[in-house]
Image 1 (cartoon, helix red, strand yellow):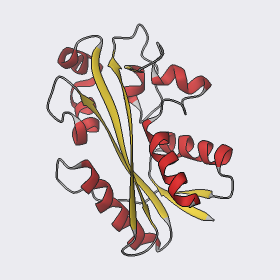
Image 2 (cartoon, one colour):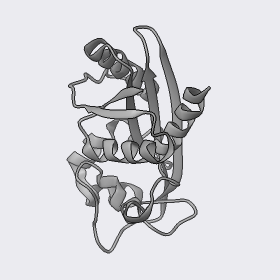
Image 3 (cartoon, one colour):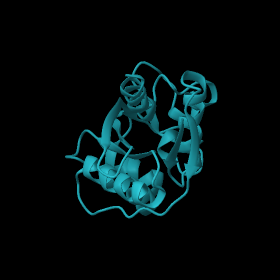
Length: 185
């Protein structure tokens, strides 16, 4: 079955495609680099649903859409939906000033599968960990938080894990696994 993945982020797409090829090769994933408007709300799930409805309207085909964010536990629901804007505005130095070293944080992904004009399924994936001040800032374009986030049960950043196998720690893959369980039923 062919399913679109609506994202302009090549890193996100590569992660999901790689996992599906290894774990469910009957799903053919194709990137749909389409413009989606992000509604203004603090509700990450509502944003993901809004984007999925737009993607369905544009593609008229089964489509996965996600909205992912990082949350610093010392703050209330922050940066959340402002994840990209925070990094763009203050960079690594500003983030580390806000959080400090070894500060608890978590990534959350709301993955939506749109399979009809009114058929939407939402799957959530979370990965807890901490923000650290790395010796070297290594990350893929579009995924800057990978340089400073270490998931629980490891001492490697997301970027370092990506070199080997990030799937066991990825919040996006955790949501995708829930989707696959539902999809296979």
